[in-house]
Image 1: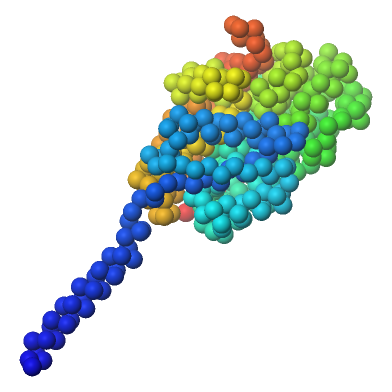
Image 2: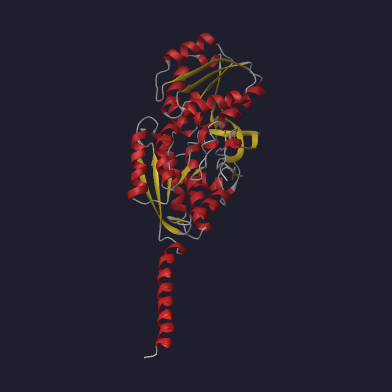
Length: 401
């Protein structure tokens, strides 16, 4: 026996075994994922289903054009209908995150539904890429490192509309919106940039479809401009009833971009002609990414895309870019967050970047409903942007590093 010689041998053997064990533990952290899983929860039934359907279709079109891959990896998208119910959305988020082990969540249309469900993503360190809902609290004091809004801050369309109304010289405005977070944000945004007086500020029930009482009050008030935030079926019914009541002869109706977009134009028809709105995107924005998106969307779905479809498409492109930039290593959350912040993709809206609160900085345009060269009702952008590279009013309250 030679103990003096055997000890180093055993020590070397133990060191080798320890190194091998550490390598096995570390290996999964260094390897790229086999595939990317995305949970897409949206409103796909009921009067506001058109918005969720457009978000879903835009997202799935981007995935199809990339060969079914995100960042070069095969992608699986788990689609769920929140039924316009916060509790259903919360349950779907929990299922996608805890059982299905998704890498990203996306899809929700409405702020109240997202605010009820998104804590499931935050508590599990799962990135939520918002293709629409972007409420003011998450832009400011409640900003969160797991939240990225690829759409526009809740106030922004309305700020642009208020700025346009001021430039037009309107002396007074009547404001109407549903009573929930996005509705309150919308009218706050309009008032932030409108320099005239507010005749009335009215909040209706979310999901309301009959506006006879409100229209009677508007007729009596006789405002110069009426600004309404009523997404989906609410807006469709309001515009039909507004025109049928003959109010369009005396009062200018101004809406946010989604208030006179393709999902509204299709069911309302010629009553939409000449209606002005403010938005960050238009069918005719002249950049290569947008030209491709519009053409491919119409080819795939036999209809023109809406703002919501463009946002779903860009949400997929953002995820694709981030997965690509981290070479598929989505378990490295810090690297993924950095890649999402960089937003290295060609957006259909043109120039785009994230502010420090993960909300967009981008242009906003005045649009008008007219007819294209095929005689179809479409939104057309008018002249120079209302705002250039516009951020939000809450970023200074965000303390996120």
